[in-house]
Image 1: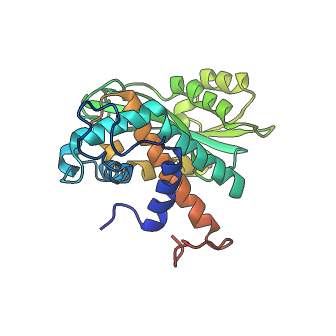
Image 2: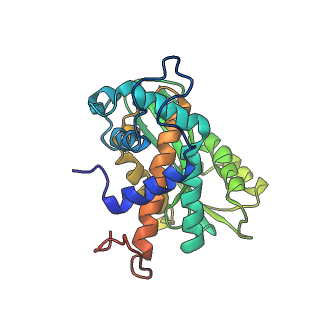
Image 3: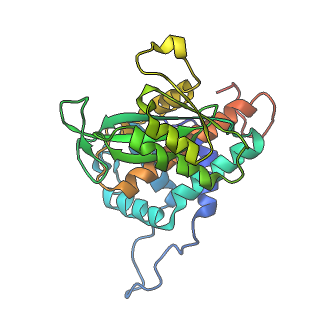
Length: 280
């Protein structure tokens, strides 16, 4: 059973393959001129998707077609070239061009996940008996398309992460004149309001001590996106220790979410050769 449906995997690979630099099948600098062929990038890409979705170790997913060492080395090579971050940006630009990002209403919220292996982005989790955990401060548009995130230890409060999270808007190009930011009661402080005022953003912040149904805002979009990201086991139980690798896996996950939403929303209005028979 494939880790992702073909109608989603194929467009991801087609665009990713266009970003790969040309490489010969054999290394011309090899002293003997004879050695094994380079393992196909498509095989390694599929293995990374399996690691991402199932959350298993590289050794568990390795087989006769590709070793765990090759998966790690090719992963680091692609991270060094910035391919996964470029892939995410291309998916975001495509969604904005076809559907349109809802930047008039964005939402920011934090989520805590487990990080049993510790690492650069891990800290003591206050909701898991002090075990290692990771917090991400995520930002989405009005539909739930992930726009970016800031990683920190699980013991960090949401409020100090608001400023660097909102600064991610600077890389999205032209912005609407008025942007409303939906926040939960954890941001109900003068410091958070000052952060919004400095960036000329309007804030809709839930009040502390008031029940959520009474003051319901549109922040459920970011909470739904957190649930989509937590369905990826590599992120829900993160064993990666380097922040660069974690960011790369988040970029790949955000790309999948964006492309899936793009296909779902254009299914009734557009036609293409590889269009799914049923709406995703």
